[in-house]
Length: 469
Ligand code: GAP
Image (cartoon, rainbow, N blue to C red; front, side):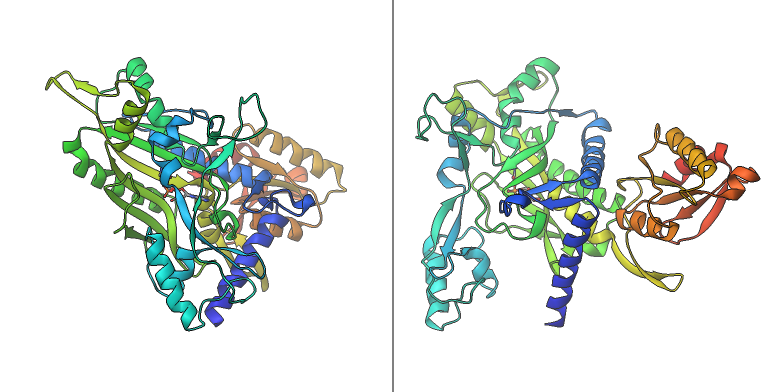
């Protein structure tokens, strides 16, 4: 019970800090909100960009065998028929007849330690009936016992893009992509024809995906509109095991390289697999705000399902000809798939720290320096002393060419430190009277230790560069 309260408290603190400091807001808040949507404010955008860029650098820029792509969100409707999503991308839903709350039936069963991951609707209803007969099955919102049986609910989001009529029919429906990799399969042929890569090679992209999630109530962990960072590695099937192990290791180490401790990460092996997968492992992070491990990223062996299906439905030849062995075959696919918002929540959760500094309680975000939204904030000691303000502005303008920097003269210096701590800014530079009267340089305060040191103004850029490396 105490443990549960700690998690709820932490989640409330994260949501409140994210809003107070301009990271994340509830979507459409002034209209009462649109469930499952969130807007990213200034610092949220900077943080998200840093995570996305770190991923892209690692997955594309620093590799010779992975290419970039930015494909359209809307694709030919047959794409999702071929992939199997139209037929079977759904979750089991139950409704409360009293308060109209919608619940994921598999999640309800899991809360009673009944594993229902990708289970049949018959199995789910049998297990729900057992709970019903012992009066244990209750609405997670109002506690009512009048719940519907489970039924399949499609996660596909529909639009009438380009349609000459308003009504949605099977003929004019255009889906919003439920995963970004669909666009990668459709551009596999163009990539081969234009860039002539040899197997194995990958195509990576970051972009929005949409799912009609039944219960999207866990802040940005599960939303109806979200961003994915996906890489599809095309290969000869005989190289699958080797590549799979290689990418598992590469992806796990990426988290360690960005400051997540090993104890906060673990592997989860899926026993029941999605329709396209022949092997699936998740990287799970121990979210303090949820009180346990949850999926951040999936590593999936997808066989030749995707290219075979798209070849069959489109009529395009998606085979690969190996010049050396003279073999022709449909490449198999190994994918890494991570949620950007879910990863951002992981970094927020991991960075959130409460401690005492100079006898005062404080909250700060201990982001790894490369991901911190703002790297350096520059202050004049007093805002009503023009010579301090002018010098601080000059230093700030110089630094912002090379660093994500901020000028701040709001409130007293203590308040400014608190604010930058809550944004996670690693360094605060203060211009005081010694700076302008004695040419004594500026003070640089370190976020984590609170310690300050004097640095000459001309040495500031190189000092920061070294510290931020
Ligand atoms: N292409 C494979 C694929 O999409 P997935 O396990 O359904 O696999 C991959 O999703 C990742 O996308 C998850 O590990 C998670 O990080 C993120 N994700 C999936 N659904 C999400 C949602 N509703 N909200 C936020 N992130 C989501």
